[in-house]
Length: 350
Image (cartoon, rainbow, N blue to C red):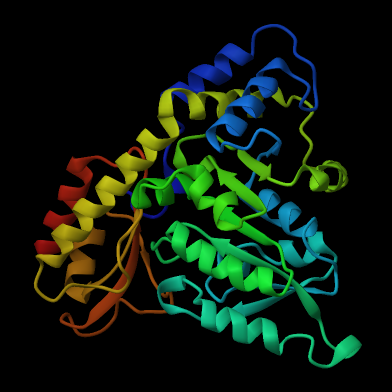
């Protein structure tokens, strides 16, 4: 009953098989392998973007930070939600790789920026001329850190605000597959058609061992990404092992099937929790994460039964009245089973 993170799941068998197959014989290094040629073509086809530049890195932090670095200057502001992944979970990597860009935090319910809040933040920035950080770019996290999603119409509304100020847009799609499954949108509708310039297309959290694609819809920015990736230490020499994962991930819609399994498990979990007295959802459960509050006694029972998850926020104490509700983050992965969900619910019910 491990609901701590989708990072705790194993790699999908199809991905592991692809890695083993790629380990046979020799292959050109640094992204010049034949598998990468197929991956590039597959992603361009998937996103209906024949001119897009496609690169692979091993971590989501690298994908995000390098993407931000090609979209803004060191004196530029990166407008993002205050609960965006680049703000909460990257240990200053965006600032490091951009050479000092400042994250300007924007409000909105359930980790989603609103166009009005974004407009206010951009308008306020740079008011003092050279004495202030300048307007740089906008970054969205989809699915969000609170388990919600942006629909294409939401992305477009935010991108329209960015465009009024001449700013590019990045999407952190570490859980992009979960957002696509949740909304029913096509990859193109969610990205470049809605105004996204660069996408970090995640695989690691959804069944890969460790691979993320950076999809640059304006290839004029590609050369800079190549140089920054190398300079930043993220150009793999044995690149075929990244390529093999991504090829398997995309083959026969595996990426969507794995995300659908994770989202379905989260939906079952949310529905089951809502039937428990004293339980409530903290945020809408739209993708593969459930944020819920339930009595402290139920937490004690679940943890005694071996369930793994995080209290959210983490400064809450297990000491206190049994009836008092504590909030938790419970994340489902592609490999979460119905039995695990039911086991957790049974332990919470007591």
